Image 1 (cartoon, rainbow, N blue to C red):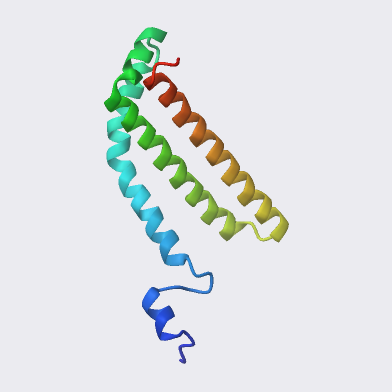
Image 2 (cartoon, rainbow, N blue to C red; image 1 turned 135 degrees about the vertical axis):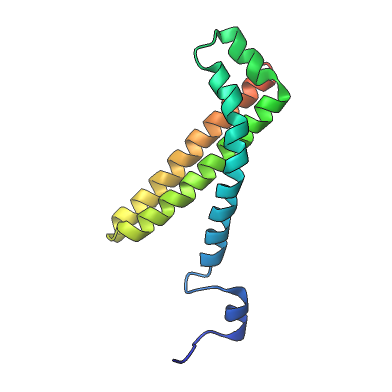
Amino acid sequence: MTDFKTPMARALGLGSAHDGVHHWWSQRMTSAALVPLTILALFPIAGAIGAPREEVLATFADPWNAVVTILFLAVMFKHLHQGLQVVIEDYVHHPGRRIAALTASTFFCGLFGVAGVFAVARIAFGAA
């Protein structure tokens, strides 16, 4: 079998889309980062469920809890976006629907990610 890749393409590991390895590697890194972040974010989030407003504000005003929660939200929505992108690219075959679905997933993951980070940051900086 003849290999039509240039030596540079073989060295970089790039396929026809020129970003397959990067996307795969990024998805693995976000999933690995989510393991400790989920464990660390679980405690303040679980403690805030059903608590009075003042307790919730005090929980997320703590810098450690705020940073961990913001990191968790940012990495989680990035990982969600990457996973949705793979599913859409694999299973949505109509080009127009694929573009619409990819655009919608990018928009909603970005919107909810930024909203979550903003909400925690607002509490952390005392504006809530």
